[in-house]
Length: 271
Ligand code: HEC
Image 1 (cartoon, rainbow, N blue to C red):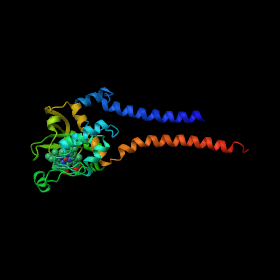
Image 2: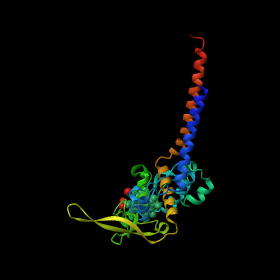
Image 3: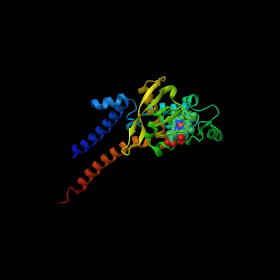
Image 4: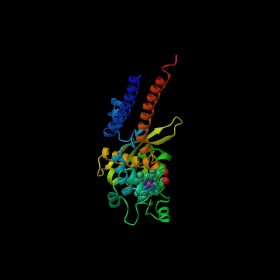
């Protein structure tokens, strides 16, 4: 019996470690294209954008810390996180009060304040034709893959007021705010004839017009970290809950084993 319990614990530990190792390796390097066909598709940059996944993990603390920095530097100018306080982020993501004050909290705000944006509401609507939404619950509403694809599929479109368009959210009011990092790309369309004879322009692939300060992998990592942070913000307790879950299951297993031994002890003279 003792052996079975031990094996159960070992299997449990093994599977969590394996899952973590898998997550880590996926993070480090995207799986190589399996077939020549997949490799060809990967060459036409963006042709498979609908299958792009965020691949983020809220268990990755360093990624969450980078994501917090990214958000406050690149998104907070327009977007708020009205249900989140600076101090809560520091506590959950293990950022020291000194670093928090120095790098993350604006001079005019306190660590216990909610994360508002400096953008005046009336002007935001006038500038973009739309209020940039609060992003506290956006990852739960739209999903992390959606936001990942939204931030990676901006392209130049001179017919738009912002000069940019997006595959995930066509005619979006959001400008391509990360072009300095990710570069500027053009969308190449192809003409497809429908069964009824009408012709339609369909997106085919992206072409880089100018590269940004990051390589494509680095840029994808930047977006993954940012999405990861928004995933955490959507449900802050999940960081602790997931870590706790493993211990709860272990405790239950050990306790079951003890209860079994106790039962055997009590019933050993009853025949
Ligand atoms: C210059 C202002 C500005 C900045 C900076 C900005 N956004 Fe936006 N964002 C907008 C506007 C405006 C919208 C509304 C777009 C729409 O509904 O078409 C928006 C919408 C969004 C949406 C919602 C899309 C949807 O489906 O409704 C997400 C997600 C988002 N932004 C993420 C980000 C992230 C992440 C950053 C930082 C990397 C960022 N934004 C930076 C202006 C901005």
